Image (cartoon, rainbow, N blue to C red; front, side, top):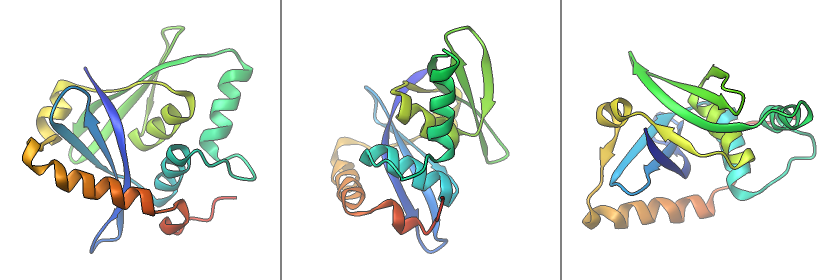
Length: 157
């Protein structure tokens, strides 16, 4: 397992499909995962420290975990089968729960939980970006600084 940081979310054109981009900590691979607009909004909200007037599903899940005394210790992106990514939520009690990576990432950002990607997933879907291409990644980060969750067109209440 390799630790991953969330670079951010964006809308991929021309398909208008949101994507979350993860970066391998201490490595040069990036992991793009296509996600839904609701999850893109949830991830963007968490990254920007925005709190909606009413809790989103991931905020509610975090609150429930705290209320029942459960600690999320890590999120693992474990597999990629037929173009579909799989993840697991790992709790301090040892319980592991299957989850969509987008939901797992949104929850991890809210709880400060580390995210890991399996070697197999990074080998199969990771994109190595050499240092000379870092300026493209920097452009992506600048884009993320200018985008807001409302740009994803989701109206979660």
